[in-house]
Length: 112
Ligand SMILES: [Zn+2]
Image (cartoon, rainbow, N blue to C red; front, side):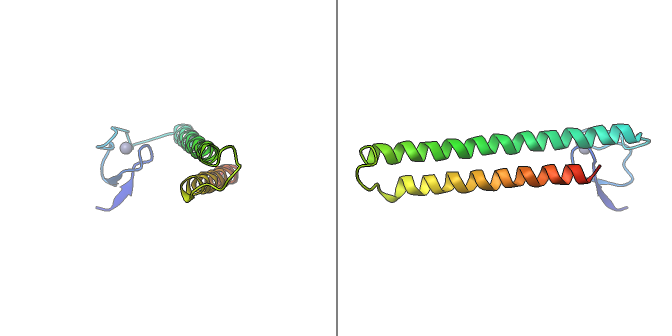
């Protein structure tokens, strides 16, 4: 018996199992269209998750800007490191997540 991964939920299952014990997905005799549809659905879910995270990062960035603006009296004086850290996290998070989205799009195109 070896361990493989369920194509539907990605959890570890026995290669002898006829159905996934985690999600109940039947492993026997799948047609390629069904496998392809599952693959597409997972890609859509991943894209959606990444775009949600990028909006969270954008919100963090905007919060940092507002915090900075309030603390510096409308950018008149320097602010403490708090809002600057928040700004940096927001920008880095957004850039990294957008980069991951582009990477996933390229990978999805390659698979076809
Ligand atoms: Zn499963």
